[in-house]
Length: 199
Image (cartoon, rainbow, N blue to C red):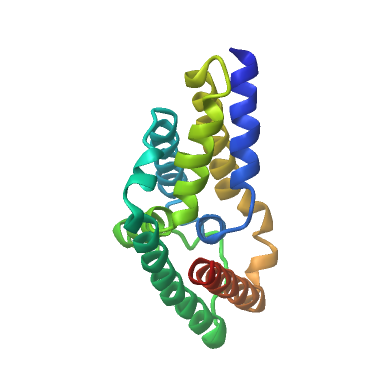
């Protein structure tokens, strides 16, 4: 059981460490100190649902419906292009800075809708969680323990990223740092979008 648990945790963490649209958004919310708990919880629970679905054998659904991957790819790319434009606009206009007293300026609803879109409209999420983790789990004697390890890595990573971002607060007290962050987020979104449509 411990072997399966550790393997699930290690593989899940290695897949989620790469900088992507979801991670960039969690980092930004952590820096702004806006709804960090709910953003991290939404990301982790979404991953948990997808991981459990993959281990339960739902990865074959993507293979049975050929249009699923293509629909997710184009929908996700469109959303990433739009969000990238928003980030470039924020970088261009500038003027944003981080202050410890400034919290909760954005409403929770739109924030959660954004993080859900960044999560569920990204076909790579399905490939990593449902397909890859689901198929690898079959190689271990205790698939539920493997899934628990992968889910644990997701919760660990997102909450560490969201709350660990506060250590960068002194840097992001300057408006110029926010402009660079927004520029980096925009480039990340567009790079992922390009990768989705060019694959």
